[in-house]
Image 1 (tube, rainbow, N blue to C red):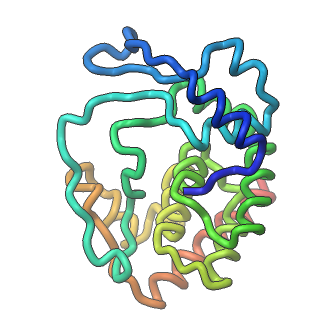
Image 2 (cartoon, rainbow, N blue to C red):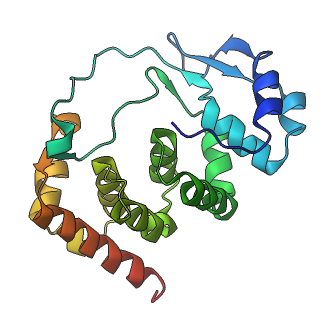
Length: 212
């Protein structure tokens, strides 16, 4: 996980006063643990970013246990691991990331440049908000030595979300996303050829964005 530096002490103090309420819209065992509106409104944009990265407001009980992943160093999975357990970002939080995408990406790039890695919460946020502008940063930090195979997963998920034809027509896509069964467990064997191919396709996808 990555802890943003923006007002972290203030945010941490406010988080000790969060309340949990049932999420009646979602039903079942769902609930929301969040700052109240007054406390949330007191935060700057950067402090809100810190809050959202540290706290996933929505709780929903999982019916099925996800299978354990093995040999992650030898595999490139099609989906990111579930790092938040039964918690996830709420609709309010998802809207924050998407509505402030440019500012959020600027803060992410600052942290990645300083820390030299991409935390699991950053990876998840990049995918959730369709942060395709982060592709060069992801490739750069990987090539500088932080060889987290889940960064390759992020690149593939961005291409999949945007229906990038070169990727959608590939054998890799068909193997990982071609049907809905067992998706969480599907993977490519890690090797240099697959790594290079993901980088090449992601770079082609990114370069094509400016041409539109």
